[in-house]
Image (cartoon, rainbow over all chains, first blue to last red; front, side, top):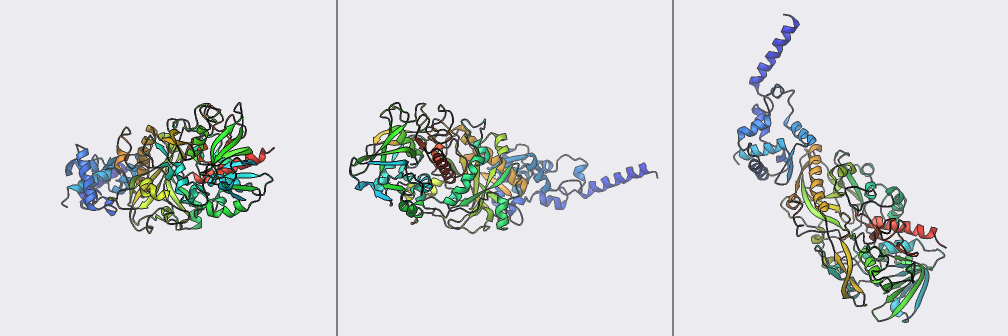
Length: 126
Length: 510
């Protein structure tokens, strides 16, 4: 096997393996982190739920779990399927603030990512 | 020396080299500098050594603009002045506070922060402050438990405050003033008119009245008005025997540009970092805290956003607790009746342990944009001594309102980016800038700007030496000369300016 063919096969194998294993945000553990915003360390669950509900009312296209998960996971690029390349939720939140990708919900200045997390959280049974 | 002016014969003439009108922070700081000099200094105080409601009532006035608390509650009319109930908050103006900012109309001082620095050092001693250290890092070196938030200095920073014990001039400096052989304090000596020479080129004397119906004159070579921002303007406007519009008012500027600090509950902070970041740097306990930090935006960020300067303090509190403006926290009756060192001399707030909670109330202290329509004029009503009362027309602008919102948008983003926590704006901050100010609109009881400093007599009442334009021997001391308000309590800066004025007067003595 020449080097070029080896690299092609190796690369394809990695991608195929990952496609079924689930990435950080989309796999079983990722699902938990997606709908458990870090804001819960500071704010009561009812307040986080209220923020999430308000966000869902504000953003027409992000009112159900499916659309919120899609928005959180972003487009299905190769990067989003590679756990070691994909940023953690915490990093995404940091990047949101860095870029100014923020949203004001009920007066709270939140990263868009965590606002979506709150919205997902608000869909969970209380 | 001290004389109670009520004991003087009516028609007396008091003579000296320098006459200081008003024995508050500015007047006493100035007078202290002259102890032992060869000049004879007259220090005139309208009140006595103790609080007297009858004398305090001389400060009553009309409020015709935005709601403001009774003027007689805002300044103390006795020896020591408002230091009798101040809380001792001190910090320095920022360098950019002195600069012309093209987005802040009428901004810019004719002096720089660097020129004022040596006087800040001297003023710190007068006010019993700590070392000349105003950087958070310097205080952290002194006490490693004081840890500033890890903010990006290009965006936001921790601005340091120091706290005077607080220095109550009325008790602290009474002995020095009364014991000085060349400084003669007259209490119960209310100046009702500044008498100008024919041609309005100089002041010839002052007319003084007492409640007992006595009237006498004061003559000095030079005069300094140091009787507070509103009363200085009132006195100049009421001195209209030879100048119809009042003294120093050829360009209709006396009384204009009245400024306050907008002290408003504006938001909340919920700390999210695990473990919780130390907030001891930002904690305050009256009478115990020597220094603490507040959060400010960088000069660059203010410029980029075209907003006013402000700082925000943190006070532990729940997210459901309503906030109080300074006016609400210190109702006028309490302020009015405060006595030096007596009950109520400190804000009536129970001390809260630092680091006890994760959520904080954010109280903003924002400069007010200079506004010529925000002004002090004379009321048709006269006080018990026959002098027209002051009328305050306090007005704010769109820039004042917009700055709050922008400040919090930037700070909220930086708090999130730095991992400190999440910030929530109060409803009134979120409202349109066209909305009315909320009912709890409040200031810091800080009065500034009615005789602003500018080298051009068409744009300022006093020149860079604090001399009233056009009058050779009349000066103003105090926060009345501020062209802009900065975002810190005015006392430290007004004391520094008084010391600077003193040096000027000494360097120009005949």
